[in-house]
Image 1 (tube, rainbow, N blue to C red):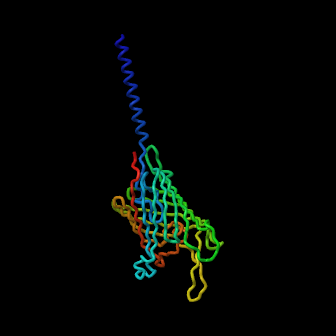
Image 2: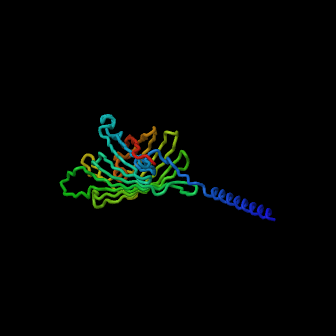
Image 3: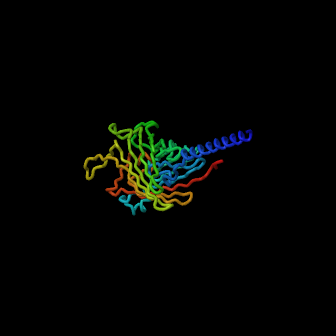
Length: 304
C-alpha cells in the first residue's frame, strides 16, 4: 500500500509539472518578444524634412547640406551654381537612445540654430504592437544678418521656430513613407497682413532599389502661406506672389559610415523656416537647385 501511495504521488507531481510546462509554452507562443522596426530611412533627413531616424546613443553626427544656385540663374556664368550656393553645417549628438540634440549654421541670413529630436514611439510587432514610429523635432533659429533699413530692432525679432511631428511607417523592406505635421513661427514678418505662424504638412516616401541605394520624394504644402513682393518690369508696379511649396526628388547612397543624398529641389534655403514657409522657387519656372546632404557618424561612447 505504501508503494502504491508513492507511485500515485509521483504520477501526480509529474502531471502537474507537465501542465506547468505546457502553460509556459502556450504563454510564450501567445506573447512573442517585441520586434522593433529599424532602417525606415537611410538618414536622419529625407531632403529637407526630418525622418524618424537618429544616431544611436553615444554617436556624434556631422552633416554638410549644400544647395547650388538655380539652373535658370546664369547657371554656367555662376560656375555651375557654385558661386551662389547655400551651405548649412550641423553637428548633433545622442546622449540617450531616444534623444538627439544639435547645433547648426546656415549661410542664408547668417542663421544659427539649435535643435532637439526625441523618439515618442517606435514601430514594432509582437508583444508590443505599434503600427508607426512617432518622433518629435523642435528647433530655434537666430538670423544674425545685419539689417540695413535703419530701424531700431531688438534681438527677439530675429528668432524663428519650427516644430515637426514625424509619423513614419516602413510598409515593406523596400517601401517607407511618413507624414509630418509642421508648424513654423516667425517673430517678425514683412507686413501686418502676414501670418507669423505657418502650418504645413510634409509628405515623404522612399523606395529602396538596392541594399545601398534608395529613391526619395518629399512635398511640403502650406495651409496658410504668406506672399512676397515681386518687382515690376519696365516701371510697372510690384506684384504679390505666394511662397511656393517645397518639392524635392532625390537618391540616397549609403557607403559604410557615410550617407550621401543627391537631389533636385525648388528650395535653396537650407534651414527649415526658409524651406517650408519662405520658398520662392518654382518647378514650372525652372527654379531648380541641385543639392546634396553628406553625413558622417563617430562613436563617442560605446554601449556597455
